[in-house]
Image (cartoon, rainbow, N blue to C red; front, side):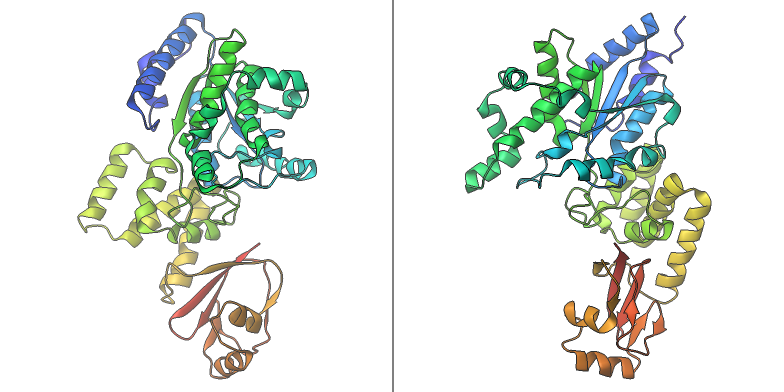
Length: 410
């Protein structure tokens, strides 16, 4: 007797949030997934599901957790999940969402970044039911002849119709040959892991389809693919990325996570509610309807979002404490929820901060402002214009009544 839940029940859970940008592709993948789930139930064999994560930085951010949560759903339904660390693909860098070439990492950088990935992944995945793999284990062993064989499955035209490459080609910007290899390598990951299903963002669709193509060329059944919308960063425009500085790290201090969520533009709240929270679809619809009707203030919905996100990754107690911290620092002292942000990379003096950011025209003006009590650090008046601020935590620097600067730790 099968130990799996009914096929249609599993299908409803797993297809939630799936988005391809093309209804025909969605229907085809749903048919394939239903068939695989039925076969799994008949044979009592769990499906093999994976998603790859390139260690381009040392920390996972909220954007990473969108496909990870789908992996967790497969786990909860009894299927086998692979958390694939792109130890080899990270050397090139995925060009899927880029209009310029990524900087290539060194072996040392990749190894250092990968160290913390798995520990952080356990905030979402069950470590007892997760296979951790590194694609350097097989990609590093391919010969030049092997790479030629992989490349023979694709045409140059197939790559150049991709939007990011097409934009660069039209502008005359360089497209480096090694960038084409990324899709081949990710496609070969599917072959090496003998996967049933691969998960990724909508920007990964080309690479996932490349995996299907290569599996067929190796005489294997092509993987079913499920793609999901991209989580925007704190700017509300670009994909969340540590490279662009618009990320929210899942390992950051609760008050920092809370404050960063509070800083997102109002228009990004639906994206966060759909992709990051545990709220049911009908609950999200109700909240957004109340917002549209003016029954719920944008600040209050953002507070609910921030508390929910902190609770997911840091626990309910941390969420309560982070909300209290926010109310004390921002609301009771009447600070704006949105303000310019910079990262403190080293201890820096108040005078250098104000002059370098243009908030004060000169050191003499900083001295005058300090003498008049017009500069505050975390709500307290600055008495010494040469005061050194340490990059140990988040700080708020206030100049006069209307100028604020959020200082984030490196």
